[in-house]
Image (cartoon, rainbow, N blue to C red):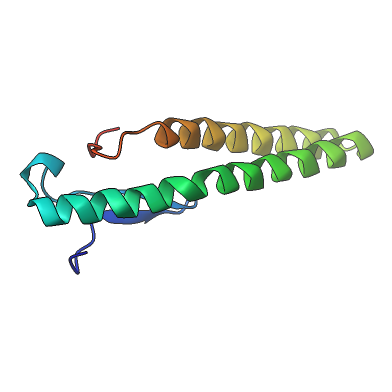
Length: 104
């Protein structure tokens, strides 16, 4: 792939996402092929990332069941909500076609 790879790491989701400088359709065929190969590699790791967030949710739920500190419980529920949101976004990215666009 070219030095200015069309993907950028998303800290929140823990994966690289499309960051095209030009539309996919405007890329030369060799670059398109490289982008598709890279995207398929990224997509293959999405289920593992989802499992990691699900494990974090389970840990928060265990902590909630053992705590009497209401403020801390509320904070953990906020954390659970955040992880669930990330899982939903990752599921959307998992369905993005390899001939993807940057505004998925």
